[in-house]
Image 1 (cartoon, rainbow, N blue to C red):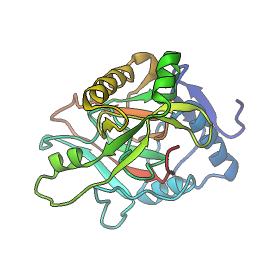
Image 2 (spheres, one colour):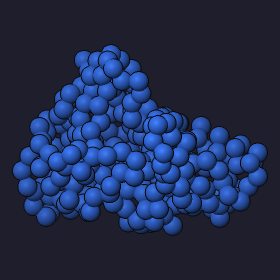
Image 3 (cartoon, one colour):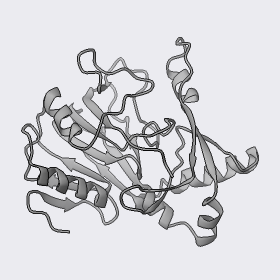
Image 4 (cartoon, helix red, strand yellow):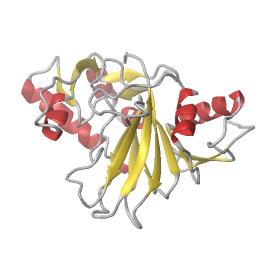
Length: 270
């Protein structure tokens, strides 16, 4: 694929690319936005360096790719409800995302993608790993693909957020999605279960479901499906949440890692 307005440099063969030649502090032309979307669809997660954006620029960039998705459990900033702060420091008891997950797969229409801007990073550590669920699906044996194809799974946010917010009396999203999803833009099939939100496969007994999910959760950890992004201050990651999982590494305590995220609305998996 050739690009006229951006410089796209793949990081691995299966997933991840860095994009150069754009200034996200300024509005971009329609062709540039289209080429960034093409790069995202091809590489599943794209990275930008040295982009010191403010909230307005962050929102403007996100809006170019769709409507915003409101987080079903975490509130946004008071003045910018579509922006969620991602922050950890010496006082943190937990961090967001330190396990393999697809953002808010518990929602009826999980997000299309997220754009994370990190302005403050520890001297060392704080990387994010991304895993390709199309690569994970394609690596399955044909009998396993046929077995998983008709199955559906429950994605339940309650075990996650009731553990984090035990004092809040609230029911969180819980929805059923196919175990094998089709990407709505590329048409590629992919594995759509994750250890954060997926609690059971509906068509199997509990023993069978637990065994199959455990197998799949281990499968997606294969480094052959992954890219590891080493953040620097004012870096941005934009991932296609429909076909990736990610893992934020908390290896920098008690240093500070801080930034902001906007999330783009998606559609019901099929």
